[in-house]
Length: 110
Length: 116
Image (cartoon, rainbow over all chains, first blue to last red; front, top):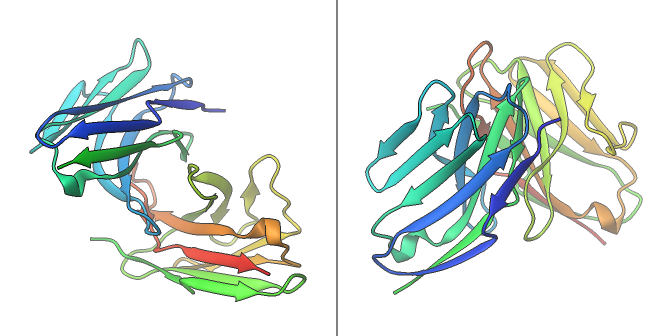
């Protein structure tokens, strides 16, 4: 089955700086890679996604890159704000099943 | 956007009792629903995949006789935790996807189960 590794597990950044989270996946057949933001006690919220036929996607301060050959994808948050503090999960979908990474707890210090 | 409603949002039950959690897709037909479990400070772990009108597919290590899943209609799936024990205390989240659409999953709000 699919295995998704996510790093780092915690990330502390100063407000205004950038944050980068990296994930690797094992199943080359996986073709859809969403990123979710989860606040304490709440459901995951989709923040951006990318499909395997695209190498990069950007939405305002958030961008995701995908390297299919290396089987890794990354989330980039620029100009971080305190409200960006949350747990972020990457995921990979293959065979109609979504496998999550271990999560990254992001803390943006004002 | 697509909405998935999950109830209850939290439940406290005594050890040995059963708890049913409902997940409804409100504005689309969900042929497939997924049930996840999330322990504190951990990731979401897929428990099972339920398809409307057929038996659920359970992930390795998940007891199908303990976690009963029913997906009787295109808009409703239920998870029943039978004979709950304190170690079953967790955050249970359902999600649904549209048929034939390699799309983001839409998550319910989750159910926090505490077994005393």
